[in-house]
Image 1: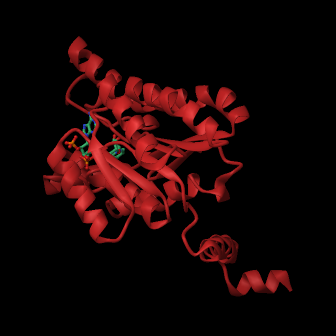
Image 2: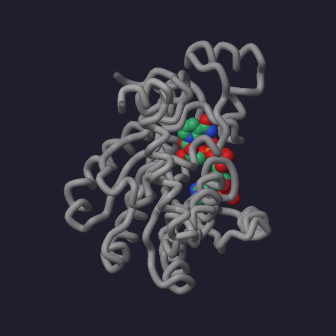
Image 3: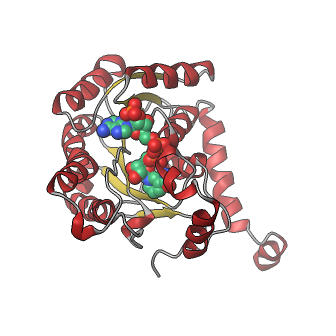
Length: 281
Ligand code: NAP
């Protein structure tokens, strides 16, 4: 009987889990993340904005942030016109005082913190890894890794007060398969997977889960250099073995899932969202 049912609906296992998730959502009728407070860094455009939108659509109060006030204002206005519960402030993740302000704002506005999505990254260098200057290494390690670690330290005590929480660090498929000429950036994204794994032992007893997202080639400003020239793009897509470029929204549902009760037993994992590009076995 079961066998026949699955034969009739080849994706029924997936379908069942979707139905469960939808039922839970409609059961609360306010979304699976209702009443959760989420911080998303670098969320005024691209992947961060898509994640902020999706978390808010699923019921969370989301604090949007990035370096420039004008970008924050624009993103907040856009999301508020979609009737989403968002506020925003400037947070350059490389600045300790900005990171603290982000935490304080969430506590003042919403009384706690349940979710952190650490999404900010820079890549100021394109060329041989042998030629990367100390300044380049400092900048990349500072923003892409150290800032994420500092943010985790800041949110953990507040998540503990709420009885737990969920953290997602945005890495990249470059963590597994280095992009040519982006050596220090690739290294920083591999290091994020290690950073995430190192937190698991101490966060699990605190009921805080931590996972990584590893996007492939996604259509944002960040990836413009790889997409500008048709011939270059064709080569990149061939090398990555993909038939289309991903959209920011392709990355957002999985983050909402990882932050939801449906993922209660998932921690220390990395989810690759890369359209079939080879990453690992
Ligand atoms: P994006 O569209 O270029 O957006 C970058 C965002 O980061 C903007 O909101 C920008 O706003 C903000 N930002 C930049 N530096 C910041 C800083 N120091 N502190 C806080 N905010 C900062 O980039 P994206 O492609 O969405 O990238 C997001 C994440 O995905 C990054 O971690 C990236 O490594 C990763 N990723 C991207 C791809 C891809 O193909 N696009 C693939 C794999 C992984 P302001 O200018 O106002 O600061």
